[in-house]
Image: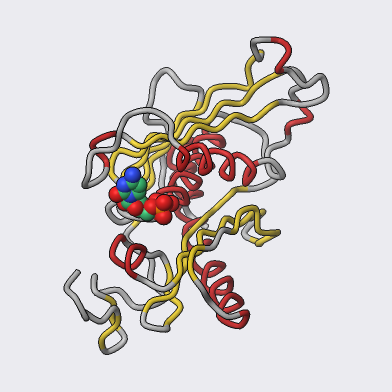
Length: 244
Ligand code: CDP
């Protein structure tokens, strides 16, 4: 990004999108042989793999909950996924993202059906271009459904933000790095209806009204992504295209 370059010119963003437009999304369910459920997802230049194992017996036993399953979520960035090589292994950022991502699924997965079990979700970021935590959540949701894990609905997520004083949908790298605010949001969607927000983080400064506008825009984006998640699952289940 050049110095003094504007983010929005004639209603178009640097990458040619409108302010309320998502990046191109590609979702494929059931891409891995050894996991119970899996998903490959692209959201713009993000490339993500999600693998789900379980519900399965949780070891060591002292970690078990006698009343419900324990969800474990590991978000990991490949060293080659970013411009400047990322040191392999967990760091503060990935520990935080893993925690909030797990929490985004807690109210949606029907854990009570599987006491003493674990449901393990692994996210591998192969290529990153901003919004990897939300792309990871979208992939995780499809992988959980692919694994047959009972859920009350889907988790669908997108980042919204502020650039050049405009609220925009689905930030890409330059907007995330040099914009005024970045707000990843995850929604719990059941039968096409938004039931609640299960993750909301914010980096930057916006007003209360702007936040309301941002959430409204995120809802629109999430409903579009939800449709693509469902489409991928239908394709996987029946080997046929999704017809609403
Ligand atoms: O990816 P997400 O927007 O959820 O998280 P972030 O912490 O806001 O990171 C934004 C972007 O910065 C990532 O998607 C990567 O493209 C980039 N990044 C990087 O280049 N090197 C890192 N060690 C971490 C993030």
